[in-house]
Amino acid sequence: MRNGRGLTSFAVAALAAALIGGLGGGAYAASVGGVSVPETVQADGKTLRLNGAGLRTFSIFHVHVYVAALYLEHPASDPDAILNSPEIKLVRVNFVHDVSAEQARHSWQDGLANNCRPPACVLDPNEVATFLARVPAMRAGERFSLLFEQRGAEVYLDDHPLGFIPDREFAEAILATFLGPKPGSQDLKRELLTGR
Image 1 (cartoon, rainbow, N blue to C red):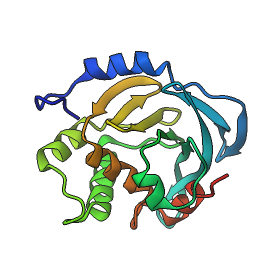
Image 2 (tube, rainbow, N blue to C red):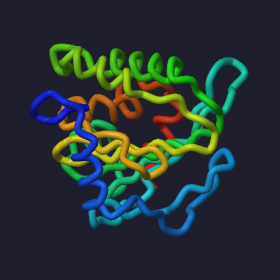
Image 3 (cartoon, helix red, strand yellow):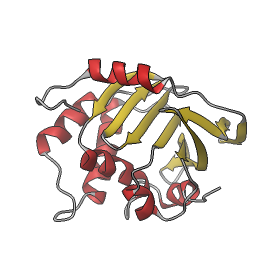
Image 4 (cartoon, one colour):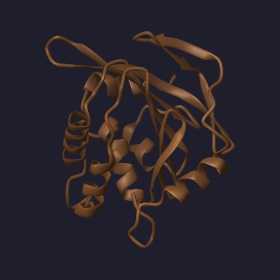
């Protein structure tokens, strides 16, 4: 998460958040794992529609960790088409269980390693290390959002800017942790790709 000079740019993220006009939600489409999921959200002056939502569980005990929802300008079910689309995309992750920073960082690290494979995808190790170092602990009730656009991705915690990822390839790799060939959960991937 850095600007063109290699520095993290929270000022850029704050300005972008003001330009985005918020990540407001519309009427609720459903309840997933006890979390109300809006049918539409407003982002970057566009109405994004719910493409799918699902519950992420962990371990053989099926501990409920979070509910993720994918919003797109146009419904789609092909993960490669979504990953390569220049359109606005939003992933909202509502936590229903506490996750330590260490657990979250390990999950992101595995997801990036499993879904960004050379030669097709090569990430700067320093960018990955910076991103992982900034991943916070998440508490039940908190919402983590990733707004993907042409120039990268905005990162929010409870609709407050957390940072900006200006590298489009890195942003796509982050989205691939949900939609790529080896996501953290194949079940959740299927739910996100229903193309409602």
